[in-house]
Amino acid sequence: MTIAAHTLGCKLNFAETSDIIRKFTFAGWQQTDFDQPADLYVINTCTVTAIAEKKCRNAIRQAIAKNPDAIVAVIGCFAQNAYDEIARIDGVDIILGNDRKHNLLHYVDEFLRNRNAAIRKPESKEQKYDFHLAFSHADRTRTFFKVQDGCDYFCTYCAIPFARGRSRSATVAETVDAARQIAAYGAKEVVLTGVNTGTFGQGNGETFFDLIKALDNIEGIERYRISSIEPNLLTDDIIHFVAQSRAFLPHFHIPLQAGSDKVLHLMHRRYNTEFYANLLQKIKQIMPDACIAADIMVGFNGEDDTTFEQTLQYVDSLPISYLHVFTFSERPNTAALRLEERIPVHHRREHSRQMQELSDRKKSLFYRQQQGRTRPVLWESDIKNGMMYGFTDNYIRVRRSAEQAASLVNTITLFRLDNLIESEEVFEQA
Image (cartoon, rainbow, N blue to C red):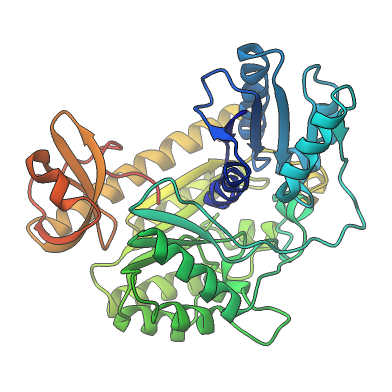
C-alpha cells in the first residue's frame, strides 16, 4: 500500500505530517510523491488565511482526480474548523481535526475493514487536546521539531486557537529525549516549532528558557533555530543565552503584525511599538550580525492610508532583515469580525505590495552589511546546475561549486560571503 501526503501552512504542520508518515512506514506502507498515484492521500490543512483554505480545496481535488479509488484523508486545522464544508466534498473518506489526526493510521485501518463507511470526525468542542511531540526527518540536514502546540492568546484576527486548542507541551525531559532521537537520525540543525513556542512548559512549572538550556547540551545537534517567538516572551535571559550558547544561532523570528499602537490594540497584541523597537535594539547591541525576521499583517481593520504610512515608516526604522507579509483575511469565529473600519480588498493588496517592496529593501541592506564577512555554513544536499547550497548561522543562503558535494553535505565550514545574490532562490523562509 502506498501513501502520499501534502502539507500546507506552518513548519508545525510539516513536523506533524512527517511524524504521521513515519507511523505508516513502520506499519509497512510505502511513501510516494503527492503527484503520483497512491492508495492513500493525506492532506494536512491550514486555516490561517482564505488563500490557505483555497489551496486546501485544490489539493483535495487534485488527490481525488489522481486516483478516484484512493482513500482521501483531510486532517488538521481546516478540517477542525470547517468540517461541514469538507464533508460535502464527494470523494473525501476521512476527516480528522487536530484532536484526532495523530491517530490517522488507526482510522485508516478501520476504514479498510469497512470500506463503505466514511470516517468523519467533526470538531469536538469539549475535546481535551493531548500533546504529541513530532519532528520531520526527510531532510538529513535540518529537521522541524514540534515542542509546543496550541495558544491562549486569542488575537482578534486568528482562528488557530479554535483549531489547535490551548497551549500545551511535554516536559523538558521528554522533549530532550525526542531531541536525542533527532540526533540519532543525523540531522545537524533543528528548528524549534510551535504555535506559541515561548509558552513551553506553561502549567508544569517549566519554561522555554529551561528547555533551550537543556537542548544546548545534546551531543550531535550542532545548530538550533527558534522558528518564531512572541516579543513579550523573548526575555533578556533567552537573548543573552543565545548570544553565548554552543548551538543556538543568531537568527530570530519575532512577529510584529502592525507598526501602529492603535492597530496592535485592536489586534489584542501584548506589546506596543516602543517595546518592540527596544527589543530589537537590544538584540542588535548584543549580536550585531543577527538576522531578525518579522511577521507583518496589512489591511487589518482600522488600517487607513495614514496608519499604514505610519507602519511603513516604523518598520523602515527597525533593524529587521526581512519580512513575512500577510494580507488580513477575515476568519470565522474571530473577534475581528465584530470590529468596524473594514479595509477594502484592493487597498489591502496595495498595502501588501508596498510592504513587500520594503521587505526587499531591508533584505538588500542586510546582505550589503554581511558582504565580505566569513560565517559558518551548513551545506545541504540540494544540487542545482552544478552548485550546492547552504545556510550561514545568521540565515543567509549561499552557494558554491558542487565538485566536492559528497564530502561537504551535512558538514559545517567557514565561508566568505562574496557576490551574494539577493533573490528568493538564495534567501528563503526559515
